[in-house]
Image (cartoon, rainbow, N blue to C red):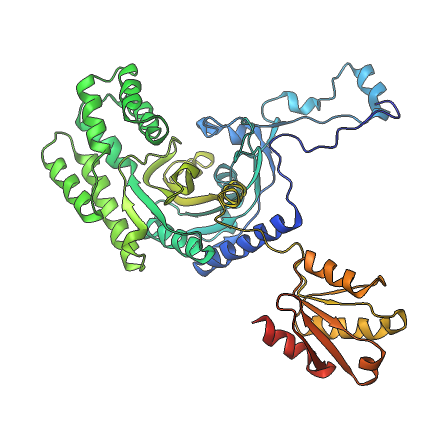
Length: 470
């Protein structure tokens, strides 16, 4: 770039950048999510943003996600080196598939590699949470990002994993969203074995089942008629497609749906897998109830399939009632083969994921959440006169030691301007100390929300502020 050329410093499309008030909201929500995760015994890990490409693509784990590759770019002072070697800036080692590297597009595939790398250092069942940033090369649009933060939990076992771990997931989802107070939501639960078992029982060929599940998973986006058309395009007979539509539309209370499924299984051929899925679903629902999740927080929805191939059992999607257009705000499920793909052994797991960046963006736009104040400071110690700065510093430090967040105003300006500055940042209290107050070891405490101003002894200031903050 020639000297004087204008640099485009805008953020790349799809890569969000939060203002302080938005970032503070994200951290607040992360704190809630982390506390709930840890209350169920999940332990934190972080995996590299970059993985070997062959890890991310192992046995189709990539799905439909577009992966960002990583290529080194030589600095200008090494251009001659590049030109001489005939290279284009790519690291020679990255020319081979084993050394090609890319940014991770989710947390689950890197978790599988993490477990394979640390197998002998971990205790199983291994319950972990991650709140890392991931990257996807999808088209950036409203509510869709190329870089976003995911909050995931997974429990992985060696050989067998209790279905009660599946039951814990709705309890965790419920606790998080009730604490955030986002309004009414519904956790929709299904089991992939129920779907695959039903497809088999109505004569769908084994090699057509995955595509059928993927089509069913699009029901909310494309509608019933288009689902039926897409099934028929896949070679499914019209009669079979109609049976599938009727099946995924089965509704009612949780117990009513379970009863309908059991009755259906008694009147269909080859229902071994269907019956197993119903039994698993029944076990999970019983566990959800025993964990105290309210009946209005969950249901059985037979149209929930989760499009990713690696899900094999329980699946979940969470919908914000009255704001269904937002899509799923938390989803996940059980898988059997994903983690073991790197080790050659059965390692079942179950997990859920909250796409936090996307969720914040959509909830703010819908007016369901509001940003926090731009600063965490609760108090501003104003600057009345420069010679009292030692007093202001001592008072500020005393308040901080009492657990109060404080900004000390180092710049001398009119008192009204300092109040405006504090108010603009969402600071509720201003501490005012002039020469008379300093001599008497007192201060004036002004509440910018109410306009009230009271006189407080400096030794009682921290206690008074805490009382008023609560």
